[in-house]
Length: 258
Image (cartoon, rainbow, N blue to C red; front, side, top):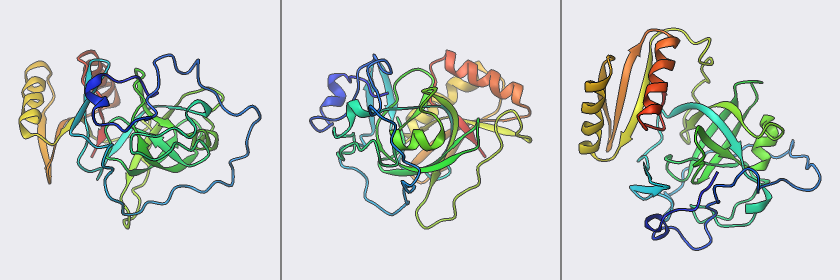
């Protein structure tokens, strides 16, 4: 969930931004009575300018620095989703828009604001499209914060979290298909360990990975974005082992790519 940021990030965020304290989820909640959101439509991807406030090159939260991606093309990620609710309803998000818990929105640490993504609950197969317009979650192990409405439609509310896959959608292009989950996917796998606007930073991570692990490493150049990719990984066991290793080294977020 959103976290209280250090002064460096406060310099670029507008006043009142919904950055939440580390005590979540104990201090957040939904409405007093369940609200039927089944008829709330998915967000619709459209061309929109980048948020003036929500897209610094990098920002720091609780001692960890995050690098905002220049674009979301081919972005795909698996991990835990959580949600935020009434406590932040109406407060300003990192993009400057007010948070609406009944709209199909979400928060992500590094995707450009705004970005539209399809979120699929890997436990039940339910899928929604949301607009990413906020930053977070900064709780360990979580990759996306869903609005109350999105969490309800995906079946996440009761448990608080769920394993999901998120896929970025590019306005005007056919949405990519959701891949099988990690346990059933076949063929070679690649893990994107980082994406940087600075080639110097990408090369620094590249050299580190080459020194300390056995798998091939490459830098893929996508316009002004430089992606550091590890692989191919021949089976899910090696993929999971590498993901655990990256976590131990503090290299996050990371996700599967082609």
